[in-house]
Length: 307
Image (cartoon, rainbow, N blue to C red; front, top):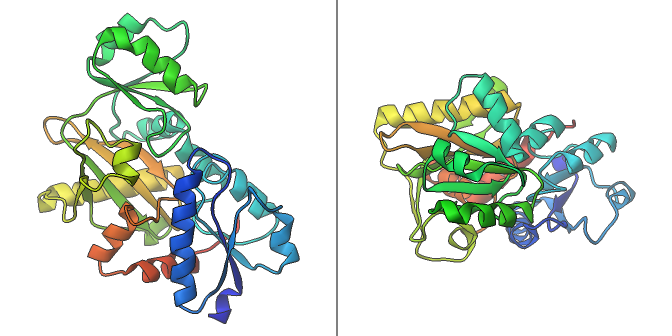
């Protein structure tokens, strides 16, 4: 596949999601090599970015997750190096990584989001509980993979939940719990060419879809088709596309949803460098849509851009 030149599959990094990224990158690297791509692993935690130019890489497949890789920082560096890379650019990556600011964008567009409150040390926690009800979720605004998220069932537990989330990020959200189910929709493409893949319903056996349920448990169920009616499926896919475009995403991303008790969908967050492990959801949706893992990796690579 000489049309791609020498490809760096960038994985690892220094974020709290390093372990997941190593697994994603290994899977992507093997898939691209199986299709004849001159692909090589590249861990920015262990090598300077200048090696990308020095060793003649012509494009980068970003399989980094979390801060430093999915938040616009790496995208900015690669843009300055004039190296095409997979996924969204600087602004969309930064917005999607920041759950607060992505919610503000969606809210301004009139898209449905769960009610939330920003927490700090001086917050009136009793007032937060009165406003959002129980249970509620407390989460770092700029982490992924459910790192630092706490489900709060008692008002007395909210201060400790805040402190736990604040260990991971100075910006902390409290969010109304939605109990009608968790879904996700993968998007492929850019602008008017973007297309939503079939939705997946996530059914964890744990209280919520936490880090362990995402990556280590074998009893988490993933339903695709998700069980939505045709009209509900069409509505969720359209909302996913609207949320994706509102943030300015390109190439690919995954948009997560929660349903309330009436079945109404609410946009939760967007992931601009979704997981590509054996437990990951984007490859699952692609497979149901007729796109095997290696084909998905090739499609994403084909959509590389600069800036």
